[in-house]
Length: 294
Image (cartoon, rainbow, N blue to C red; front, side, top):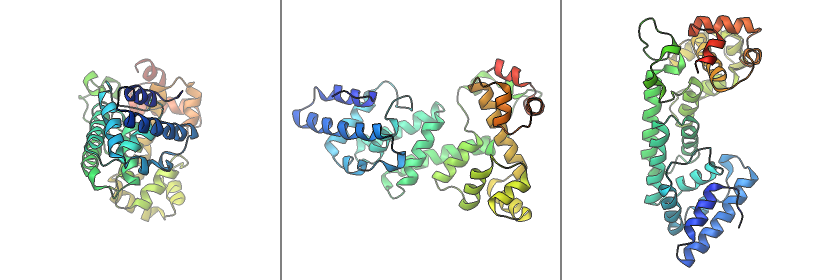
């Protein structure tokens, strides 16, 4: 059977040396998985995965195959979401060990997109107590990131007089979670007190021109919004919005080749000169300098 997923190919390759009964079941599983992957379903709508994950014999085989790969799976592997969801839904010890390995891998290597997907899996299946160890590990990491860089209003303690561009190379080895990623993780893991406020602020912040506008978009009076916001986020709406904008600017300048004018437009600046002024004020460097030093 020709497949488009490298994970499915690895699974079929391993099944060649398995007992005939296992090989047949693995073949059937791969066919079902490939159908889900090709359909491009949303990660939370993989109908049928729970039933597939109930076959302990096959799931031990799948988990063992994944564990033998030289690296943990990431979004670079086609079918990543479907296979990670499948393994997470299995109660087999081998599957749980692999999910725990994934959580450690993503934390240690700053794979924040993959880490957020694990958080989402936990939010979709909160009743699965066997995943409590994974939850505790992820929640602890999010708390550490939050303390180190609370909602992206700071970048940690830098040497006196240093700018963000002068962060030691050792600090750059682990990619810190952005304010937006922290918020999403906290929502998935149920770590927020006022979920309604957080969801509304996260949804509308890209449209907000200022604090008053964000309060209106979220359906609160300005005074109430400021009070609730500080209770939940531990900072002011202005500082939070500025932190998220810093994140976005830095990401677009260091991870894309978008023209500076487009970066300015995407980040809500009325002109490129306002982008330059923002970068000088917050990073101590021009947009061009930030891009050259990425």
